[in-house]
Amino acid sequence: MQITIKRCDKLKQRPDASNLGFGTIFTDHMFNMDYNPEEGWHNPRIEPYASFIMDPATMVLHYGQAIFEGLKAFRTESGNIQIFRPRDNFTRLNKSARALCIPEIDEDFIFYAMKQLLNIEKDWVPGTHDASLYIRPAIIATDPFLGVRASHTYRLFIILSPVGAYYKEGFNPIKIWVTKNHVRAVRGGVGNVKTAGNYAASLYAGEEAHRNGYTQVLWLDGVELKYVEEVGSMNIFFVIDDEIITPMLSGSILPGITRDSVISLAKMWNLKITERKISIDELIDTHESGKLHEIFGSGTAAIISPVGEIRYGKKILTIDDGKVGPMANKFYNAITDIQYGIAEDPFGWIEPI
Ligand SMILES: *Cc1c(COP(=O)(O)O)cnc(C)c1O
Image (cartoon, rainbow, N blue to C red; front, top):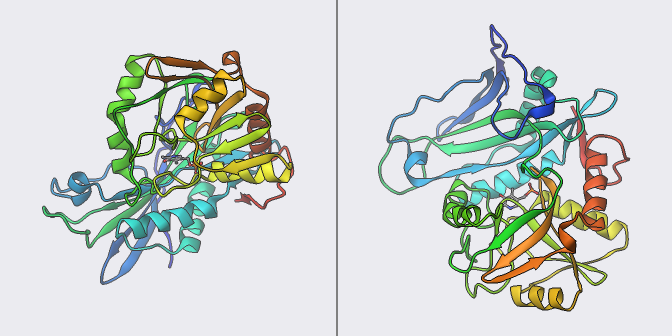
């Protein structure tokens, strides 16, 4: 399939790399592609970044049949551009597609299309350490129809956004709020899928956390509200004694690629790493006995995010005096060094463009 390319007449002013924030600035061009049952995925095109014109009845607006991915491109010291584990993102996008009855895409083709887009937009990849170009592929249901069924037509698009730190805290400990009243996902649902509705469902508890001075919500399992699941945009790790523990993928936790990277590095370093159920009560007990040394989150946006405080009802757990712990530091440095081409990549995670 041939990708049609239509370039902008006038390019945007590019922002200063030192103060990018996250997710507010978009590049000059985007990738679009459509699906209908007759032609399958067709009309791949790179064109000027532009708004969609939609029928008000467009199904995604009403029934949330939407999936997305998030990955990053980095500029190395020598000026080359490389992407971190992109194939894993497109594999996961197809998993999400199957879960939401969206027709699958050709992973190799989309990968190729994304590289084409990045080639056109390569000047948008920031040159400073800890900034990068965030890549957001998404698929939405486009039938203009009121009634619940899977759409017959879809739009796939990729937009790009130069980003700095995800949290205003930067690489500093965040405070997280454990909600006792809400759940993010249940087993058998779509908690393990990057689909729009999961995030809408998380907002209420998120606002509650913000009102109380906390940055994110730590979700407990949807059945007993007992076992720790994840943070809703990050997976979570605990350093207890000499062991690193992360909740096992239960079906309601998003299988993070950064999570997998942390596990792979820990295994390479012969650290004790365990995927298992871990309850909030166990965390409180280990904290009381002085064995809970560190907590950190993992996700593409923030890479590694140290957690300095957890609040569960009236209990406040201060972790490691609210400092950045050595493990969080070690994983953050190892992953970002691979991403920026400073360290060798023993896993084959890096794809040059
Ligand atoms: C994207 C996401 C993560 C992190 O996944 P990465 O592949 O590491 O970016 C964790 N939890 C949820 C709910 C997510 O949407």
